[in-house]
Image (cartoon, one colour):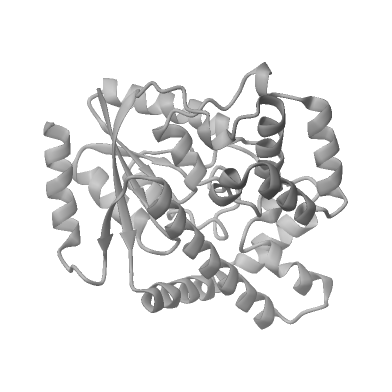
Length: 305
């Protein structure tokens, strides 16, 4: 069976750096599991690896779409499986790196994400009108009522995923979180990185400050100017918080503080998701200074099994 290593955990914990080191050691290539790094020209707010890092190790599913293109979890699942299979055939280790929980779950659990039986275009249009009218709270309440399991597991701040989960439940009577076809197609070793809360929050705050120094404001202004054309990217943390600054209703420091706060909240949700929903081998980067050596040893054992 195909062997795959995935590195998960909250934002800013050090997943990308570890992924680069492991790829170099184990003849691997990196597959981004992030739902925003797919977009070209959106580099700073999405925390992509640097151009030098992208060249040091082959990366996949990075810079594959323009920001006005629609990209779904099903697109990710299909493309990631193709890449993983190709890498395995070439005797390379596929390393999935990224923090989008449902994306990774779709891959690991082989979720059934499509098909005519769970699609209702008319219902979807009605739900989209609710969202366009500013009714994301209404969608959240609807999902919580009809599918509390999905409400707990998916990103409820993402209206597209809310709509999809409601659509699936209403058309099939089955939660989108239970759509597993039961066929294990690959053997995954899930590595989770975590850190002491205050240390992680300090890292997040420093990262946002560095992003601002490196051009985040200009990048966010580009997204702001095209927000109607960039429906997915325009809702990303690091961009949407700066809109009041461009509107002239808030000062820059207040908006940057909002990015830090939302990033901290997102990190907490990521950790909760992976801890509760997936079988992850956790490593605290503060408690164990030799955690990388331990991980390398465990990967070697995993590859021999």
